[in-house]
Structure formats: C-alpha cells, structure tokens
Image (cartoon, rainbow, N blue to C red; front, side):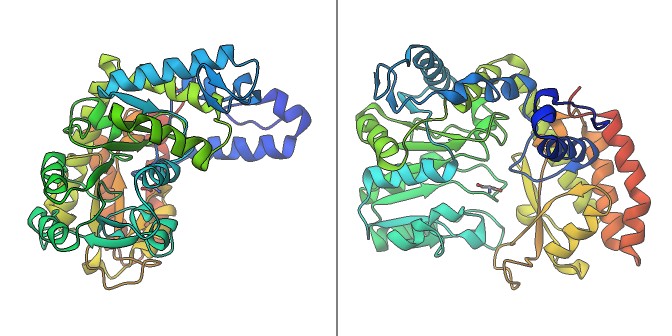
Length: 417
Ligand code: DSN
C-alpha cells in the first residue's frame, strides 16, 4: 500500500490501480494551493454520506411517490434535504435532485420555455455560464439568446439590461454568473422582468454560500426560480438544486424527473443535506466572512503590486486578474503558477482580445484556501508569490524556487485536519 496520508484498504484490496489514482489526487490536493473559484474542499461528513450504501438505491419519483419499492429510508433522506435547503434559503419549494448546475438550469428552461423562446442572459465572454446561452451549449442551440455584459468599469450595466429587455421581450431573464465579483442586484432584475413580462431565473452556483450566510442579497424573494450547485462556496458534494415559488413547483419537478433525469443519486442528496445542515451553523457564516475577507485582501495585494483586478475589487469569493500588461496570457500564467503548486484557471476578461483557449486573465477564488484555514496574511503572501513569478525574468526558475514555501504553507494548513 502507498504511503499516502489517506488509505482506502477495501478499494486497495480489489483495485490497487484505482486506489493509487485516488490517493494521488488526495496528495495533490494536500500539496497544492487551490485558487479555482468554483472548487472547494468539502468536509469529511459530506464525503461519508457520498460514500454510503445510498448509492445502491433507485428512487425515481419524489418522496412518497416513487416508481420503486423499498424507498422508505431514502424518502427520509430526501425529505431532510428538501426541508433543510428550504429553511436555509427561505424558499417555498425545492428540488434537490439535479445532478449538476447545467441540469438544474436545463430543468428550469424546460419548465417555462419552448424551443426558440428568447432568453436574456449574461454573455459568456463577460462572465456568464455556458448554460446561459453559449452557442456550443444546448442553451444557445435551443433558444434565441440576447446577451448583456459589463460596462467599462466591469460592472453589470442595469440600464443596458433594461434597454435590451424592452427591445427584445425575452421570455426568461437569467441573472447570475461564473466570473463576476460584484453584488448582483436581483431586485433590479425583477423590476426589469416584470416590466417585460419575463420569468426571472437567478443562477447562484458561485455565491450560494454567501447568500446562505446573508453576505450577498438573496434572489429568493425576487426570482421565479433559483438554481445552484452545491460544491462551490456552499462546500457540499458535486451536485445542484432548484428553488422556486410554490406556483411553479409541479412543472419544475416534472421538468427534472421525468423531464431530463431518471433516478436521483440518493448518496449525493444525503451529502447535500449534510452540507445544508452545516451551512445553518454559526461557524458557516464566519467561514463565508473569511472567504470574502481573504478575496478582498488578495485583490488589494495584486492592485498594490500593479496588477489590475477587473471591476477594481471584489464583494465575493472571487475576482478576475487582468494580465494584459504582464506579457502572458491566462493559460501561460496558469502553467507558470503550476510550477509552484498553485492551481488557478485562465479566464477571459471583458472584451478580451484573445481567444478563449488563451484568455487575458486568471480567475482567483478563496473558498478552498479558506477551508484549509489560510487567513489574510497567508493569502496576501500567496498573491505576492504570484506577482513575483509573473514579474520574474526567469519565471519557471522563480516558480520552482517558491514551491518549497507553498509546500510549507500546505503543511501548515492541511486540507484534511
Ligand atoms: N465550471 C464552473 C466554474 O468553474 O465556474 C461553473 O459551472
């Protein structure tokens, strides 16, 4: 058996090759600083629920109305998950079955749109998600998409959203993004949707933890539908859910199952419930506050060292670093940081002249660093390492020289305490 920190004796006994691959990832997570804004390190309790016998059970349908026998225990599991997420977000109705954020969004679209319906959503190039109408995604192929973006200050231009809505009369407006660091004014989106008679869907996949903790205004009072993943700031298992007003409950549930999914993943639903329960604890709010404080501290450090941050800062867990003046594109920068065991992802900046495969920015998020306990002093040091690498005459050599300091930080703040 390997000398990894975490052993999987049962798996090792039957499949040492796979045990080694999993242990290699455990080691990678321990020895790398994770800056990908959409990733996190979930608690062991969440992993326990996911690795449980619930994976064996088929349960097509909903609690109390299944297409399979033997669902009395998984009914309890799903009812707990639904009750917790409704309470956490003060929602009228919840569906906890979507396997992913993409499927959550697809379910909402299927619930209220027809093929060819018009949606108004944030442009992918300005921070929107693939499922908000990208031309290579089902959303851009099935629906007519009108896009809004950010202004020259990197902020959503609500007057432009209003103008586009009045001009195009969308059936659905999507509020939410994968790479936007500022507060989203869901109330303003509601007013615009009401004026043109559109549904409003808020995709809070990135900011769900902040919303749950009350650090970002909630879309629940304003949106017809709220979709989210469970594994980003919310720190649960990989998965998703949808919240909606009671009036939309039946068509949402039917759009999820049988609309686009069959059997729900009951082990993942149990793990979602564990995460929802943890998000109700006072420590969770403190954790979310630390995430935002760390993101602000890092963004300030970059700005002080002369690297621009899109929109001039952050209100959330993430921000976009504009690398235009460094001479590197986003991919080159990520490759250099990888030499120092720092993991980030390239990201387009608004009006990016480079193609998406290169991009002019990197997206930086603090949920994972905060989960392993790094505070403002440490994340500022990480920002300084990044600047030192990107400003060096010999960046590969510099990154390799910095790597032992990164490994020291990793040892000081283990992922699995
Ligand atoms: N892929 C996720 C992200 O990185 O933001 C969104 O689904």
